[in-house]
Length: 271
Image (cartoon, rainbow, N blue to C red; front, side, top):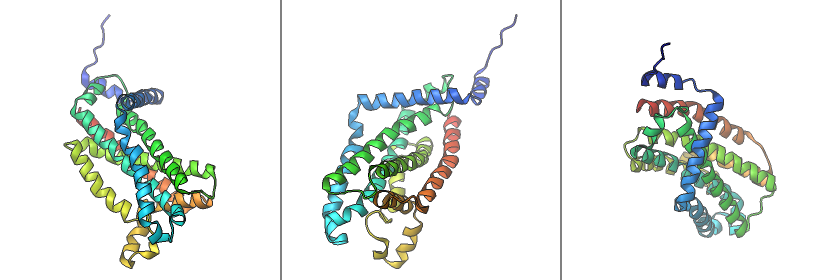
C-alpha cells in the first residue's frame, strides 16, 4: 500500500476548509492563551484600569461646571462619552500586541500547526474583550462614585456596556489589519491614534453638538463615534433602543465583514 504525503502547500490548502466547530475550538484555545498572558503580566491592564478612572475624574472636574453648570448634571452627558472613548482607544492594543507577537515569531509557529487560519487572530481579539469589559465596568463604577445614577436602571447599563464591547471588538479588526501590514508596533500605535483622536474628540462625547461651530456640527453628526455615544446615552438615561443603536450595530457588522477577511488574507500572505 502506498502512503500519501501531504506537502506544505497542500497542507495549507486543507486548512482553508477547517470545520466551523474546530475553528471555534482553536479560537477559544488562542483566547485562553491571551488570558494567560494577562495573568502573567497584569501590568498590561494599566491602560484599562487607570485610564477610565483618571479620564472620568478629570473631565468631570474640568468641564462639569462650564458645560452643565455643575458636575452632577454633566455626568449623564459625560459617562457615555468617556466610556466609548476609553474602550475604543483600548482596542488599539490589539494591533500593537499582534505586531509584537509577529515580530517575535510567535505567529510563524502558529502557522505550522494544524489549526484554523483565523484562530490566532480571532483568539487574540476574543481575549481583548476582557479588557473592554474591565474598562466598561470601571467607567460606570467611577461615574457612580461621582454621583451618576442611570435613569433606565442596571439592565440598560449592562446592555449599553455590551453594545460598546461589541462595537469595539469590531473596530479592533481594523487595528489587527494594521498590525499585520505595519512594520512595527510603534507605527501601528501612531497611525491608530492619528485616526482615533479626531474621531473621539470631534464628536458629541464631551459637549452638546449645538454648542459647536456650524461647520463642525456637520462632521460630528455623521461621525460614527457620535452615533455610538448617542446610543449609549439613550440606553442608560432613557432606556431607549433607537436608530443610533441600530446604526452602530450595522456599522460594526460591516467593519467585521470587510476587515476580518482582509486581515486573515494579509496574515496568511506572510506565511
